[in-house]
Image 1: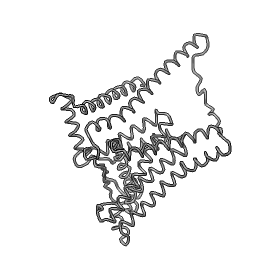
Image 2 (image 1 turned 135 degrees about the vertical axis):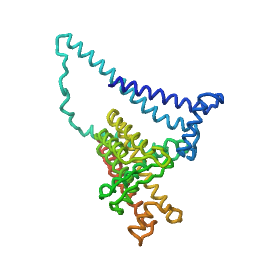
Image 3 (image 1 turned 180 degrees about the vertical axis):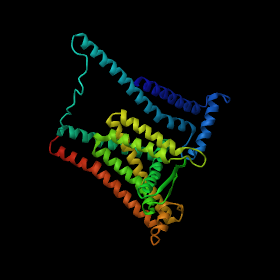
Length: 372
């Protein structure tokens, strides 16, 4: 099985390298006008136009090639290395067992040789806490860089689609737990989305998009920082959930583009595989980046809604407007958006305090007390 996976990731690695190389060829403008690369680039540009990616600030066809191929290259390279190392390790172990059998000793491995876990010590706990704080800092730095570098806008685009996916999934979950029915949810290429439900409690369903995304990001950040040993299990559970809810309710948009299916199954599969195969550190970093991005995007979207409500430019189909019209007719949409934004900020602030600031204070206290 490992050899098959190694071959698969090797193929993905090769294709991603070729994809990025095509981007450099397009950027260098060195191919003849009637070449295969030119025709392929034209098809890719047409596809990017259908996704409305060309409307993103800083877009260019070479950036699209590199921005979409680089994450895939890194993931494929990691899993190719991981499976190749596993194969070599298994071969070395088999050779050692064979040599042991030749010396007259039993070559049958002892089951659960380390069945008794290593005793947790204060030193190990402090080392894990420091490592977790460093990973959280790297996650915040990565999101900050992505948000503030226009040339990296393409790398943030998949994460924004993921945030929209979580937003619509929040409506779906709220409809289900309040006794309603879910017909479908759709994610559009411009980053918007819609969930079509029937029945249920609208007072719970309408805010579940923005507040659900903020709660998702806050909880994910809190869990990945407070129980870092569970990072792999959390990642696998999250990946399985994304795939499951996508298969059940995710549908293509009106033009036939399966954005919701691609985001849900794509992110779900990657997160599931990383949870099952990657080290805990990689899982923690992945979960922290997803958590920070989702929570901050939810808060930013609520700020956008609040500004739109005050300026009169908000979409009349927006969740805050519909909530104000149907649930609280005496409160304007701007007040609803302000309340939701306050709740979202409170959830994120609590997660950051409990997950990062409080452990950092403990770390500083340990240093003051002479513990290391």
